[in-house]
Image (cartoon, rainbow, N blue to C red):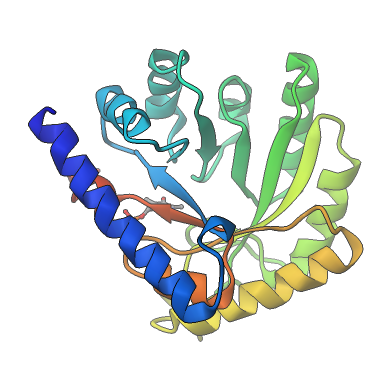
Length: 239
Ligand SMILES: *Cc1c(COP(=O)(O)O)cnc(C)c1O
């Protein structure tokens, strides 16, 4: 094994232990939680090593970086998640490689994703990103729709050709009433997810939890955790 592969293997094993322990503590099955490795800022060669180590879900947050990386790894059976704020002029590119867009947060984006997916003849999975720190009718600092906007967006995704509503995503807020209260934030997300599932049972994905707070997310009931630094190491600061 190369040094890098050994390091990734060790990090993955540690994350795997954390997820397993969190599942055990919550009385959940390990297979009910999917690990998504967030490979942003790291090269395609790392994605390849992660695939060799058994990773099948990866996530990126910037199309400029993600598009060439996905192209370089097109031979691998990977599910690509897009988790960043998405401008409509990038939608066509993102639809070319992403299987799941986790950051759907406005009607204009739903329309753009739908026409790109339909044109490409693809069905694209969508998660609605919830900003738990956003006021009614607004969007969050780091993207996401305010909780009271979820239903309207869910209806739009459901009605949009080429799109499939899969569930909800959130990033624990840095500000507002949930700042520093990850567990409470994820509990609130689960409440919203239950509401969504009541009328749309197939929309059962709940994406929450990052390197620092995956235990809180698993305890709350997340089905997908998005882990970057704990697997790949600290990211160089982006400008
Ligand atoms: C970067 C990122 C992650 C991973 O964060 P880490 O703290 O590195 O685990 C998860 N979700 C989103 C939306 C991200 O942008």
